[in-house]
Image 1 (cartoon, rainbow, N blue to C red):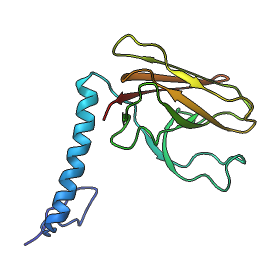
Image 2: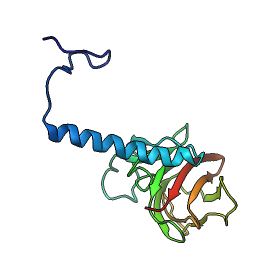
Image 3: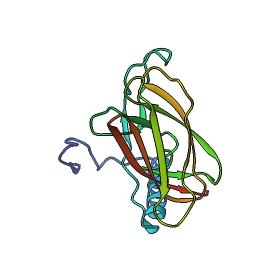
Length: 173
């Protein structure tokens, strides 16, 4: 019996029967993704897309930087690590972020001061607190971000005339 084929996946045979464990694993993954997305969308929050890419080389990082999850502006001049927002679904961070800091690595134009701000979009809240240590002379810059409450947050970064803005959902487990 011939299998069903899809355009970009020519030759994938849906007629092959997978083990029950594979079906359960795929259903579990689908349920987790839909639950995370549904929570954010239910609150009216549309998290920004996260890309999987290799950041720029930087002497501050031992060896070549490894590919990872990032928020990136259009000209790739500012990158923000997004490991903390990519665990469950794009832009959804299911941790208790109330008053807790998140370490976020950034790449920005070399030697340019990085400014970060953030505001909650879906309700009144104190602003995001960005801890930005002094004196990183290369493109890499370590920071700490503190979200005072759960909710839908817009984070904005500026380095010189370059900007990056992204939206994340911060919620409790």
